[in-house]
Image (cartoon, rainbow, N blue to C red):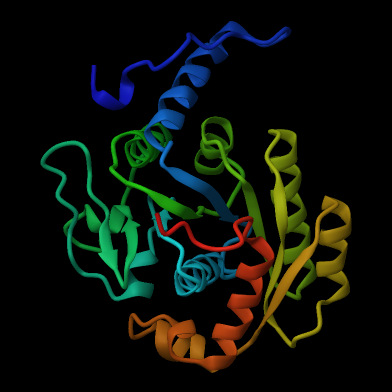
Length: 277
């Protein structure tokens, strides 16, 4: 039995009406909770629709939190189609010769992604659901994240294996739902938030990406339907393509982008100041 699979504390108990098969999920949840116990806050960045800018939001939010002095980790939970390393200009590999895995450090932020494990980032990762879930468990149970104030998790799109696993086994502060002005993005954002709520996960707020600066009716419908708040709007800006394509983080180079994400970070943080102990 690996260190990540050892049981800690009391045996988890089934709640009334809960199917006995769920006991394995409860055990896993306890194991993960123990391994991530030195991480104060865990925030998922999510949308059921691809292409809305989840990775853009996750990366720049992580940098905004780090700029405020917090200790930050960034996990690419899009296991079979990882993009985080391209956004960050990372071409190093993680050492997978044994556990625990060690995240790489970029600009003071701890980063982990399957793109750091495969030997060719352009090669498709053709894995079935159980292997994807096993990789997620390795990032949660068998990775040494150390002490962090915030772990930002960039989720895969959709409402199946990856988000479902994370909602079931990870003790999250909640999800930031990303949408765009188009109505189809709003519909899928609602699906995302309703899935989270059905699994008793919190929706921390909504971000409208590629915005003109004023949230659309579609975005405000997402906010209203999910009973949450608008965290902010991210204006369409060529700086995102210009810097991201070079593996540079836009908020580190553009004052306007930095201010937008600092505002979102400010709306999210629950600590008045970083823990400098």
